[in-house]
Length: 518
Image (cartoon, rainbow, N blue to C red; front, side, top):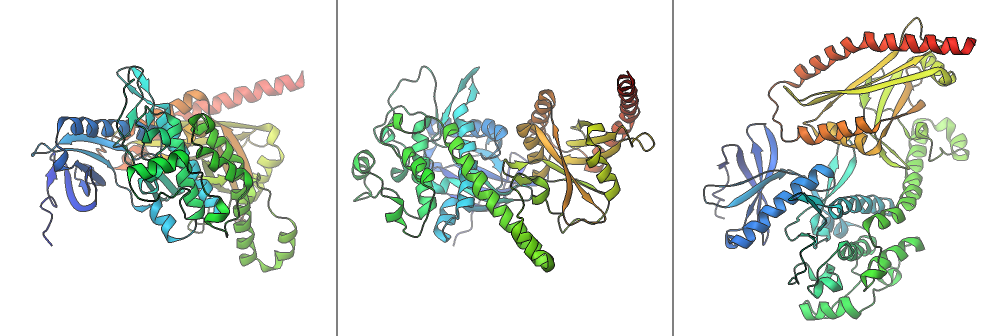
C-alpha cells in the first residue's frame, strides 16, 4: 500500500497531519496536531477532483456555516480555521471527534428507548440551531442541512455530558435567503430525501424533518420505513411520493413503543410538508415528556440497583419507596473517584429536565442541616470571574450566608474553576448560559453516599450573556501560559472582592434585623 504523502506535512506552519481518518466524494479528513496549542484537531481538504470555483465556494461556505453554528450549539461540529495549502487546495480545521457514527450504532444493536430519546433530542437541538440561522451580510439566514442520515451523525463520549451527539457534514447545506427563488437540482441521499427534495424544489426546515423521520424510524426498528424496488432516482422518487411508510410492528415485531411516539415519527414522514411538524421545536416539545418519563425511570432503576448492591439490608425499604423523579437529591450519588473530604467541584447532573449544571460540595453534616432547616434565613451570593490571559479560565463561586448562624463564621465560600480550553469547562460554561440556573448539591462528610440537600440558584440574563460570550471568545484564543497562572490571578481577584461582599452581607443583615424589630 502506497504511503500517504500528506502524512507528516505541516500546513500553514501550524497543523501537522498525522493520520488519514476519513475520505469521501467531497474530500479527505486527517487527524492532526495544532503545534501552536499542542491540541489534537481534524483537517478536512477539498477533493482534488472538485477544484473548480463552484465547489471551492461551497466548501468555504460549509466552513463558515459550521464555524458559526458550532459556536451556538454543542451538537454541531465546530470549525476553527480555514485556509489554502501550497497546492492551492482549500482546507478547514475542526474539532477532532472520537466515536462512532449513528449508522454503526444502529447496525450493532437495537437502540433502547431512553437512548433513542436522548439521541433524538440532541439531533433536534442541533437542527433547531441550524434552522434558526446564521448571519450573512448582516441578515439572518436559516440553514437547511439537506442530508440528514445516520452516517452524518456522530456519537462520542464526553466526560461531563455522557453520550454527546453531533451533526456533521454541512457540505450541501443551503442558506435560505429572501432573494433565492431559484429551482435547485437534486442533492442529497436518495433513501432519506423528502418528496419535495426529489423534485428539486426550494426547501425549508420541514424537509430536514422528513429526513429526521426516516432516521428515527430506522433507529427504533433497525429497518427503513420505505423500500424502493431499485436504488435508482426514479424508483426512490415514486417511493417517497406514493408509498406509505410500513408500520413499526411489521418492521420489527419485538419493538413496543408508546403510540404517541409512533404517531410523531409517522407525522414527520408525511408526504406533504404541511402535514408534518412545522418546526423542529414542535418535535422537541413532543419528545420532552417521553424523555422525562423514560429517562427518569432509567435513573430510578440505576439508583435502586446501586443501593441494593451497596446496602443489602435496606432492600425491602427501597423497593417500597423508590426515589421521586423530581428529587435531585435522590439522583445524585457522590462519585467514586472523588475523595471523602471538604471539596467543591463542577459536574452536570442528569434530571427530568435533562442535563443541569451543578456544583458538588461536601461539608460537615451539622452545617448542611443548619442551611437546610433555616433556609428562610439563607442568602445566596454568586458570580463568575474570567480571564483570557495567559490561559482562558472562569472562576465560578457561590457563597451561602445564614443570618441566624453565620455571624461568627461568615459566609460559606464554594468555588471551582472552568478551564475554557478543555471540553468539560467549555461545555459547563455553555450549559450555565443555556439553562439559566444551577444546582448546589450538599453531601455530608459523615454520610457521603447520598445528597443531603440541594439548592437551586438562578443566573441573571446579564451573567448568562457573559458566560456565552466567554465560551465563544475563548475558542480561537491560544493559551500563552500555564493554567495555574490564571487560577492564581482569579483567586487573588476573589480575595479582593470578599471584604466588599461581607460588608454588603452585614448591611443587609442589619437592615433585615431592623425591619423585623419594627
